[in-house]
Length: 276
Ligand SMILES: Nc1ncnc2c1ncn2[C@@H]1O[C@H](COP(=O)(O)OP(=O)(O)OP(=O)(O)O)[C@@H](O)[C@H]1O
Ligand SMILES: [Mg+2]
Image (cartoon, rainbow, N blue to C red; front, side):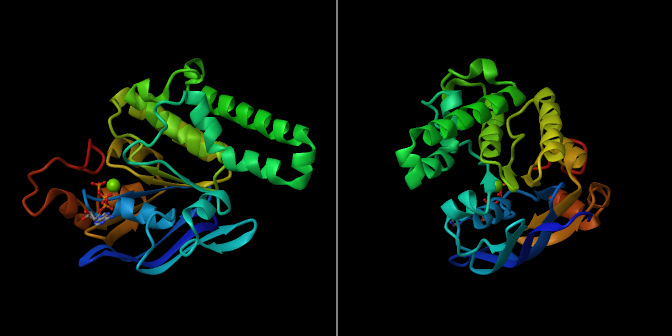
């Protein structure tokens, strides 16, 4: 892998009662790269994201983010500090927008913490212009991202009435409005048609090229994974069974077996269609 390790996951474990959802998982993700986490349904992919972003408290192991401000241990931090201070943003497998709010409001609300930080400073309270400036910046950022994901003309539409693919793009825009150091995308191509998947590839590549961040990508759509990923981590039943470049993963016997089973009857997952 090239570049400095932005994220270091060491011996991560997550148990739910007797179920081991993630088992002794170690991997790294680099700044400037897209690292995919793939695996069959129930492999533990979303649970890894939940551990990274504070939605689950890991049963064991460590998660560290290296940034300009030094090294931050994420496990142990609240989800609000992980988002606000460590700058880890995520999207959700099941879209979690505010459906009754407009598209623009969804992006504005995402920046609430930054706006209130400006307002809560004593200087900010005494000087409303500071608060207004923070609001204006947030609106500019929101409009900028709406433009980049092709939703500027939908700014005043309730988010819940957008087509599915547009809601997925809005979730990515919302995450990007928080200026993340690590962007975690949970199945951003789910429900997209082939044209929308190709557009998603372009969007992910543009984000990666133009922003100083690392991307973690959970995805079943191999037309996305194989085109945009630099590095792929493969899970099966919570265990890492392989990691490497798209080319190496495509030809890895354990990966093929995990997706296809012993009899090789199912659809080929590695590069030619949906995996699971
Ligand atoms: N909060 C929870 N409580 C109990 N079990 C859970 C919880 N979250 C996940 N699991 C279990 O952990 C295992 C891994 O689930 P996870 O959602 O991480 O899989 P996944 O790889 O994201 O699957 P998919 O591709 O279907 O989204 C599954 O057996 C799931 O039922
Ligand atoms: Mg999942």
